[in-house]
Length: 170
Image (cartoon, rainbow, N blue to C red):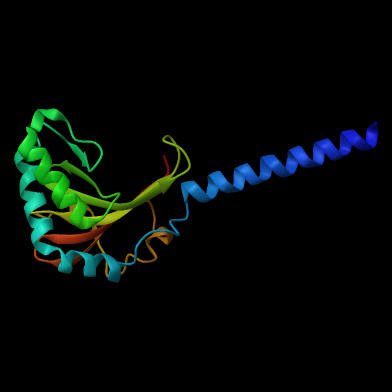
């Protein structure tokens, strides 16, 4: 009886541990899945016209929306506008999320964290027409940004275009 209880406890402990490891891997708090600066810059330059068109569209539609993705677009934009968003987002690849704030546009390519209230990070490309230090600190390398203190870091790739990395401790 005692031996069976120990086996059940061991199996339960292994199961809970595997679930915990899986959830930790899915949350990616160490940003192991983040694209490199080189990959993001290559994506930008190979789809520069799409990035510019999307940026213009998002700024025009910012009063109606502040969050855009290929799966989350409201009907308030009109059918032809929705189709244009979906077509351009499809060109950039699945999973790209667009946000706008303070006359800037973020193209989030990767993000992670443990919980909505816990530590998190995001990395992608940002269009900032009028950069100032309040948008983030300029950096030459964001491939190792997880080692930097929490905040927003930017690396210029073209006039008004940046790779961004943002982290916070929740």
